[in-house]
Structure formats: C-alpha cells, structure tokens
Length: 89
Image (cartoon, rainbow, N blue to C red; front, top):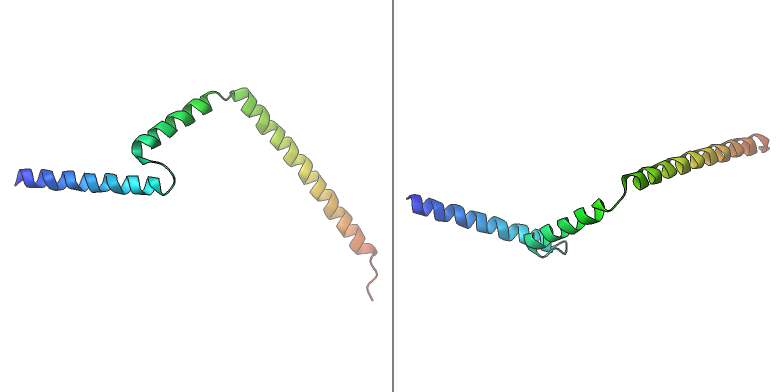
C-alpha cells in the first residue's frame, strides 16, 4: 500500500511538472531549467544597474511629471479663458 501511494504521489508530481513546463512554454520559456537560466541572466543584468543612476532617472521622471502637470494646468486655464470670451448665440 505504501509503495502504491508513493507511486501515485510521484505521478502527481510528474504531471504537475509537465503542466508547469507547458505553461512556461506558452510564454516562450523552454521549461524550468530555461526559467532558472533566464532568472539568472535577469539578476545579473539588474545587478549591473547603478542605484544612483536609477535614483537620478526617477528624479528626472518626477521633474518631467511636474512640468507636464504645469503645462496641463496652463492649457486648462487657457481653455477656461477661451470659453469665457466666447459669445453664445
């Protein structure tokens, strides 16, 4: 009985592994080993990014965001002015 249970559990694990591989393949990843290889490459690439450069890029994006908000506000104000000068017939 124990051997049969062990076989059933092993088969369940095998089926699960096949299902994981199938799902990974749907996204262009050739199995778990390819996933680990890709993960390792990703970690290496991320490790090469300088934290100061990332922080600087975030700061630049925030400054750009602020500028775009100012431009939006100016356009909104201009639109309101235009509407106030329009004569309705």
